[in-house]
Amino acid sequence: MSLSEIDPSDRQPTGIDGLDVVLRGGYPTDRIMLIEGAPGTGKSTLALQFLLEGKRLGKKTLFISVAQSKPELDMIAASHGMDLSGIDIVTPELGEGRRDRVYSVESEEADLQELIEKVMQHVEEKKPDLLVFDSLLELRLLASGASVYRKELLSLRSMLRKASTTAILIDHVGADGDDRHGEGIVHGVIKLEMVTPVIGPARRRLTVIKMRGASFSEGWHDFRIKKGGIDVFPRIVPHEVEPVKLENRLVPPHAPLAEMLGGGVEFGTSLLIAGQAGTGKSTLSSMFAIAAADRDVPAAMFLFEERVEVLRARSAGVGLDTAPHEEAGTLRIEHIDAVEVTPGEFSSAVLDAVDEGARVIVIDSLSGYLEALPAADSDLMPHIHSLLQALARREVLVIVTMSQHGLLGEAPVSRMDTSFLADTVILLRQYESGADIRRSIAVLKKRHGEHLRRFEELVIRPGAVEVRPLSEEAEERTKGANQLGSE
Image (cartoon, rainbow, N blue to C red):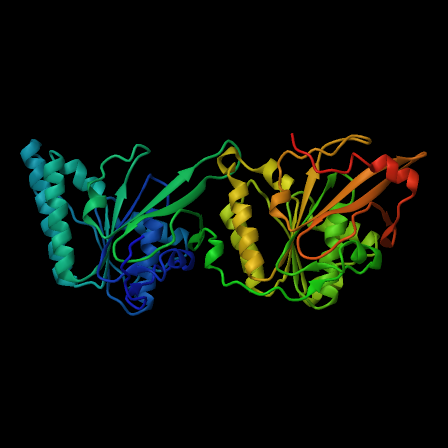
């Protein structure tokens, strides 16, 4: 990231809100940008959105395409519902009137010089404010060697500088990076990348390699191509979020549970609810979300394992009716398919909910999310850590559930150690009581304030969720087994 800084007002919007966030406002005005990536990564779509935004702002726009014909560009635009009227599109033809000649190194270099001259001619005639050239690959193929290619690149750069236009050069590069000459002559470089996992759709991401004289958000940022164009989901940088002072707390509706938590759970913190299957993790998290909605504090639940209609029916059966709050807009419930949604896209959805007013976020469950992720997204935990930190600084209470392995009488085992992510940890267990199978609950940790360090019985029955004192016999059964473990 450059130490010098371009004035924020001296930026050209990209036409993509998330990319403008990454670029701190857009492309630097009157500079040359390089967009590089393999086929299918979205380079043309990104360029078209840039020109369409410029047209909307009253700028003169020009698209010079050697790689694609006008009908091909129209086809791309039509697939997104884009109207290219008002954008000048030219597709230079090379060697007109010389179709029967024998090609040689000299003739190819003549074509290269002819192409550069035609580009210069179009720029001088149109005098565009914004320009896209597609692509440098054609220049590279016409050049007899690296020195010739670089010479013509420098000519192109000189011409664009004199024209005082904000330009985007598109380059098609393979996995090995191919030629890197283009990166050295431009002001900024954005690299687009696509990975196709074994299961699920292609995952796309971008990174800003350089931006002379302008700040930007470093690292990889997920993006998706959909009808209408590209959506970019900026990487979360927690320290860039304005910090908040801890205020009030969320008090559970059941007094014994509130007492266990030292009065409740503070906003701006995270709560982890861990336990084996059937211990009541989802039910308990629903109770917290509804408790917030009862106080007119908006809450949002993101489900990775359970369908929304199943959660609604199950919650209603234990006296936790979500319908009134959903209708009032104080409770939002959304199912997320981890195979279809990248970590960056999920984080963006959570932040959108917070921007719309949510102060309680439920993620149910983190283990389900991890299990469903393609191998390409195995670095989920850094994403989650950054998300939780950002939400904490925005005074949001985050409730995360996590499944553990282990049967009755066995210590619960976690596939990952996530306790360090949470300010408060609630452990749920099942135990034998005669012929019955019952549940226990304990607050293992609470960073902010005191809490009761003892086991109680969690009762989930038709019409109610309750916490009751645990008998001495049951307490003995739970000792030694109620600990967070790891493989």
